[in-house]
Amino acid sequence: MSEAIDDDLYQRTKALLEPGDIRLNGVIVDTELTNEEEPTLHQATLDIGDVIAEAAGIEPTDTYVYSGNDDDRFGVNQHQGLTLDGEEFVWECQQLIRDSTYDIVFYYEADADQAAIVRGVEELGFGATGVEGE
Image (cartoon, rainbow, N blue to C red):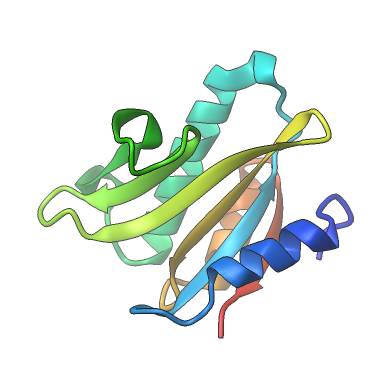
């Protein structure tokens, strides 16, 4: 676990991955981005979503982002990556401000390549802590 990620956030993320209809894994992304950098945060969310799609065997161009801002069933700063053809779930994230910077918690189906996701997030220049579900 990255030193920048505290145990509380890790445990809260792990709780999101508890068994349900589908098995999930996750990644906590430490961005160091502030409120003043929201356009960069938005682009980072899209780029990380593309990494997750690729690791799940889905072309990023075959996905779109559905935002909490568009639907009262979601919170602000909560987004989903869905497929264009059937609106299937690819990933979901929550952008959380903690200690004046954003951490983004993503979760996705457990059959996506977890190591590739963590590596891809790190290649984008962010800290990444993988969280595996049950």
